[in-house]
Amino acid sequence: MYGKGTCPELLTNGHEKGYQGAMKKYDIIIVPDPVLKQVAQPVNRVDDDLRAQMDAMLQTMYDAPGIGLAANQVGLLNRVLVMDLSVREEKEARNPIHMVNPEIIWESDDISVMEEGCLSIPGQFAEVQRPAIVRVKYLDYQGQPAELQAEGLLSHCVQHEIDHLNGVLFVDYLSKLKRNMLLRKVEKMRRGSESL
Ligand code: ZN
Image (cartoon, rainbow, N blue to C red):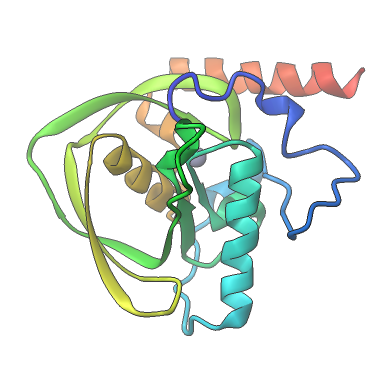
């Protein structure tokens, strides 16, 4: 996910050919790829291979730029997500959060409405209603059990990313009419860039 208006030039990133950065990174998968509708499987062990995946996902997210990325979005179907809200503040030191097997263990009755965007649905934004505060249980980068209570943008972000792991996109919360409109715009944009 990326925050409102933080990423006006998404299509110039993420899919550039010939990228040779210092760190491995992935291509971000875009709708309507079926992997985005699939349910990711729980991770058995947090090992160096999984940490390498998390590093590469984070690099992919920073380069996009985005504030959250789930494994489905890079074509991997394990329950892993990364987030970093500091991406929005250019000078702030990076503050990444890695989550393995994240699970919402509590959510508030209070509701929050915020405009969301998604790296897999480039250039499109819509207001989404979600529980305002959630508590999430997960394994961290080292495989240690951890909990996070999130509110505001972080709450929207973590719920958005966990949705990805369940094959759910933010447009699934919209009316069919609005959803199809946004998806058609992405399709049009894609065709436009292919014909260049
Ligand atoms: Zn997303």
